[in-house]
Length: 461
Image 1 (cartoon, rainbow, N blue to C red):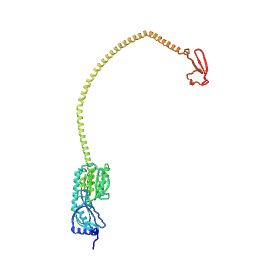
Image 2 (image 1 turned 30 degrees about the vertical axis):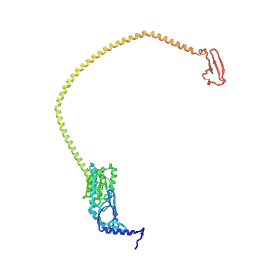
Image 3 (image 1 turned 180 degrees about the horizontal axis):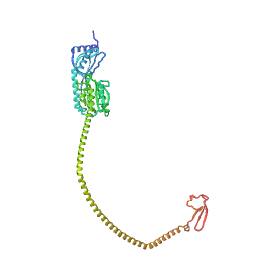
Image 4 (image 1 turned 60 degrees about the vertical axis):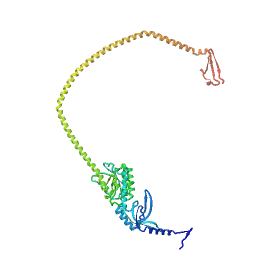
């Protein structure tokens, strides 16, 4: 069959190219190969049982290569079962794998890796390596021991619980804590979260964030879950979760129900317990130890008080005996002292009385002398005033007479007759002197007085 050409070049159909690629790959990649990669997306379909993983190879945070893969149902069931047995986790996304696969190209579906088997021990090694990287990173950041170094409250009464309300582990924890034989009272508040698989990482960290916002309401944080093996436990080795627990401001206690493997979360938590019941017992023990210490201190106090009372009684008896022995001597000494003081007091009193009497006589004599001198001075002053009084009175009367003459002269000069005599006149209206022309009206009758005589006039305008 002659092929179509274009510009002297043979034209191939898409199927021709696809079949050619298929033959080249089939001839070149004619056996299975071990390939290491990371599962970016699992793409498992439960209905068919087939799985179509998207595999990638990273260089740092950049995807260097990406390829599609296929795991048929029969192979997937066997691979997943062995994966759980060895790693404790089902096959999932974001894990590194070493797979045995053939390279196949389908003209219809394109290039794909047909995975025949996955080596779980390789993935387990990668998980262990990643786990150690997380531990090293936390230690390098100097946060690995932070939560374990927090002081545990003496009485951790207020407990924030991260768990699943329907889980048996949560039920065991609550029953053990609230039904303790000693009758200790606890306040618990549940912050529900998924506790297994990758979703547990965001669930637990978000609930820790809520608890931190109310940190003053709680004394400790407890993370508890039921048993069920180690499947899905790798989430507790995640850096984000472990860093959140390590740097949490309240003590974190874990009881996530496993004993074979110690997770990084257990390592950085303040305390780690195998079961939720053990966590509850440890909280109860804090109260029990405090009560025992309190009772022991009370016993010590009672014993100390009794010992001090006995010592005090003995001291009082000795003091009383010594007092009874020394009292007569002390009394005799005080009597003698009082006698001497009495004699001294009588002598001093007489001496003071005599001195005071002499002082009073001296003061009386001095007062008499001072009074006589002062009286003589006052009599002399009165005599001088008696002599000066007539002269002073006559001079004052003459001065007042002159002042009166001066005032009389001024009054005569200011009298109306003298004013008129000097050429002035007085205009009267109705017997009252006119001082303002504006007060006059046309037709008003006026009288003008002179020194000698008067005239009458009428206002025209």
